[in-house]
Picture (tube, rainbow, N blue to C red):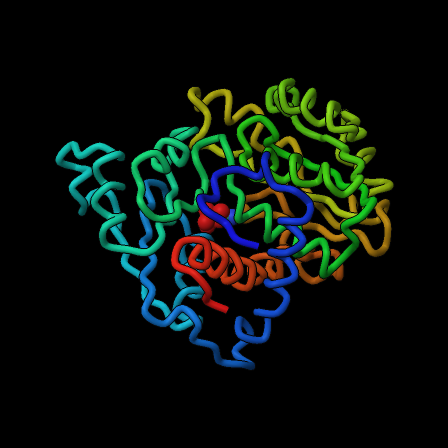
Length: 310
Ligand code: CP
């Protein structure tokens, strides 16, 4: 399978997702440093991050380097010509003449779609405001597939479901796997109606719960998210809701013994540190899976543009 731009999960077919995840599994020994591979030798990846990142940025970089490619990084916006007023369109036009693919994170929803209009190389959306984060979704699906079960799973999505782009992207992709989705969030941060309607139109059973305790009882996976201070126009509003939902040892007493707790990270206070030592904790492994999944995404994007790589 080949990929051009990767902007959203909405248009992924199950066949496309399964191909990426199968290829990611093949790259796991390379990500674990058990095997060497240099199939992206001679290729250059560019990183344009207009918002902070640790995992997405560094796992793309690791994936590219471990496959023999090179990385160029615009660095922080403060040290770039963005500070002189250069537009995103011009930045993308220029950088696409330097690199073979661009990974873009931007605070504005729709920025990656706009960038794809001006780029001559594949754009990979690494998060656009409250919009989408498709490679996070792929690594989330890969984690579920490797650590739990993907077909017919019951998943609780919890925390910030309004602004959380990782849950928005994940919901759409889960519609291919006959999932049942439980929702648990503070009332101010519920999943937008348009997404719930889209999911229902795709035949997904979506249930809203008042408490996390009730939502997780029958779940195979609890997908917890951070309440994102940076997305709140009003800090008082953030303070009101930030401590409302928390994964604790007590909560886990009433869930399935093999339920996995996932989180895209970074976390703040929403998972008690003691949970890390339990067999439920899956979030650090989830972060690792970002490397083989992004290896698969990069190889497919390069193949589409430049011909056979594998
Ligand atoms: N999960 C995620 O996108 O993490 P970063 O913000 O650190 O990239």
